[in-house]
Every structure is written in structure tokens, then in C-alpha cells.
Image (cartoon, rainbow, N blue to C red):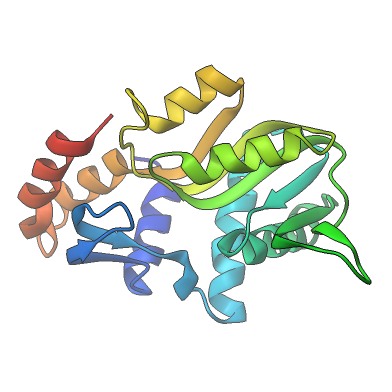
Length: 212
């Protein structure tokens, strides 16, 4: 595990973005862990979170014309990542996000910020089944842009339709997917931390049941 992955896991643990216990997910699954970047609720934590995204984008030399963040968590991600790329890496990229409902007066339309044009980098917090990312890909494709890259904080490595969601999306939509960490990274971290390895068995059981 590289230093960035280790630092990011420790960041998520310190701010309880990553928690262990018994959680019911939107899918109805019972999960032994929960990951929620929505807890980055002040400027300091949000800048730290965006810095990890920014570093991944720069390290992989990702090419794109604008950043898209799907409502709702993607809104703060897109804006903060656009800002951090400028301040930390002297890279200026426009951003936009979508409304849940099309606005028919004033600032009309479904998008806020830059209008989609060219190659899109989609940012989101996690990839689970892949449903929300597929919705973003379809939305952008129907509105004159080409989704090329997806960046998430965490890949849960769970099954999509038949296989791991991130691989299905890559194969079905020709979109490259990058994550700061994966479920394997968390498992590896738990195995080396005596204060946390009590959660390891439940995590491994969950993987056997739901991993793609």
C-alpha cells in the first residue's frame, strides 16, 4: 500500500468518514462498515478530501475538459476539486453539476456552472452497484459531452450486474475508473492495525457474499 492510500485511510478513520459496525445500506444490504464523505462538513476537511482527489488526478495525468459532480454529494466534490487543482497544481478546469429537476425560469436547464462540453471527468464519493455513475454517463452523453474518466474516493468492489461494477462500467462504456482506495486497501490496513483487526473477519465475510 502506498503512502497516499495509507494517509487517506487514516484521514477517513480520524474523521469517522469510514466507520465499522452494523449498517443498513440503501440497497438493503447489512454492511459491517460505512463510508460517508458527507461528513467533510467544513473547509479544512473538504480541502483535505479534495487534495487527495487532486493528487490522484495529477499523478495519473488524467486528461479532461471539465469536471462533473452528480447531485448531491458530487456538487461539493466538483467545486472543491476544481478549486484545489487550481490552488495546488496550477490547473484550471471548469466544473458543473446537475439539478434533480430541470429549472424552467431564470437560469434555465438541468446544469449549474459550466455547460457540458468536451471530455468529462466525473467525480463521486463511492462506487457500489455503479447505478449513479451510469446515470451520470448517460446524462452527459445526451447533453453533448463525452464521459472519459471517473474518479471516486472509494471503490467498494461490489458486484454490479454480473461482475464488479467498476469493471463493468469500464467495459460497457469505455470509461476509465480511478479510486483513491479500494476495499482491498481497507482490508490490508485492518490486517496490520491491532486496534482494528477485530473487524477483519466480518469484512472478509461481507466480501465473500457481495464482492464482484
